[in-house]
Image (cartoon, rainbow, N blue to C red; front, top):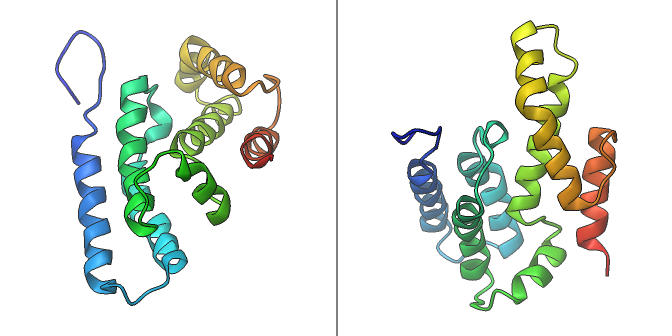
Length: 163
């Protein structure tokens, strides 16, 4: 958390832990593993450190960019590219979504589940904040507002993986 008038988060610690985990895996692999195996290890062990509790925060564009940049660096190093235009093709080949889409799906899932809560405080928080955030997520992906979590996820995947 960062001191100030508005609630803000510091991503520095999460990004630092993410890089430590990535470097730990890379030091053990030492070029002897297939790129797809390494990518699976990064997704299973490193990505959770980067996106921990991301469902609870409404990130700014610069915060999304910082998180995405950290995640994209893996692909740049692993597949030996330095052009960001190649990333989309690599994501398609690997069957991965961009980090922002993954975070948005997590947020939609988390916020949608608040509607079914019996906790009065959570339902009030949903009424105050979550409805607006869900509306923004749906508008950004051109998805109907009342769709299920699975439909939201399917729409994002179909949109990204469409040729």
